[in-house]
Length: 640
Image (cartoon, rainbow, N blue to C red):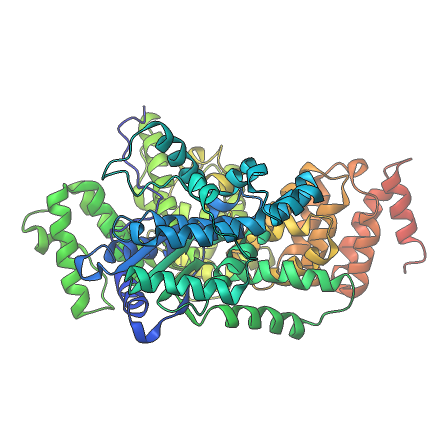
């Protein structure tokens, strides 16, 4: 049924549809300028903000003939997640890739073997102690290399091990000479390695680059966002080994919040177990670590409404036009953009570039993108990955409507999906309204009328609908209070509760904080709670949704309750209200009894919630002979 459904890929790309080539070119100037090397540059931005695409554009640019003396090595940080020691795995991979480079590998091979042997020597000793015992480790350090091939092989990157095995059975030719048999080279090397001393390693690596004639070694480290905190730290420690080596440039792509979070988890959380660390001390420690490692932090800007509109329009052109037409569109847009960075690339410009009438389906897409760009930008924080995923989700809904013979309008579907994607709670509330009123919600009409007449709605139950972002959504064309919304919500009926994982996707920083909050490490819980305050509104709502789901699935456990109370203590908007709504609908007897005392503590600090909490505790108290009833009675005792 969906065989012919053309959707947009969610992978990084070298095709620039958002004007990010300018960032790639700027970074290119830095990493190829001898006067600026050595350097470690951080490409920082939100998850899905375009970092990976910039790295791929940079890699592609360095393939040009003018950079034939530059070696570019690309690493996905996530691929080292499975290694016991990501630090050693990354260092080894850098050395191996350099030794197998098509132009410089042969010159570098001997130096690579010597450095690789020293790196492995130290790591073998560490792994031997951990997995085999002290005797084997001592043997390794005193020359017993023959006893450790299995451990050694586990540390060489898998691609190199495969090429080693292949080299044993296949004769080497001019085309395969660079695929070195690294295990054999290390084992047969007669030099006795010394211990891995940082200064000596840097000196020898610098001499290796001089010997090969490489003018600049550019190492791209991408996708640190997906790694767990220990792997992030190990990757950064590996990079530190190369810091200050002449002619080197490291470019790290990551969400800076995740990197800071990993540093705090590794170093600050440990101190929290022993002493009270202030927020200022925590901030200084994390800030100092990053500033010492990354000399140039480069923060990618969020896309503006005009850029989001251009992006959606170019995605539509990519989908509906043939390759030749799309190429002409890209060239025309790039020319226009060089003359005016601030204007959106719209219908008229696309029509001029094509020199013909625009197809009806593409025309509808272009008209729609103009109407929703502002709302999407506000709701999705100018994030291109989130935009693409929402467009793909909309495409699926349209296909479902077509199969079910539902006459829906694209602009109405899009408007509802913007709300669904940016404020799931209000989307659910709107669904309840339209269900009880046969598709025509009266309260939505009140809101639209108030917006049109520029007056405030006095109804306290509509407080959440008075926020600026939601008002922007209500103003979005077309008005929908006079539209039968039943068919539109029928399309979303099986997605409402699972939308976070199916469409919106939980950002890595949110997932990381959630895992820490519900974990059993008090130091990490503390770090997670502090980091919550730094999330944007959409991310905080997503985190709340995850915690509420956790409580609904595990009402008898303290972890979810304790986690959400940390959010309440940190004044995350809507956290207490969300908890109270959830507790009202859950079977009381299944609840963790200690919740009664948590609630009382909150009520004593926030008197405005005292009546609602007392009422809830009274409900718990009526549960007969149960732990929650006894706990509620104790909490209410003596509380006037």
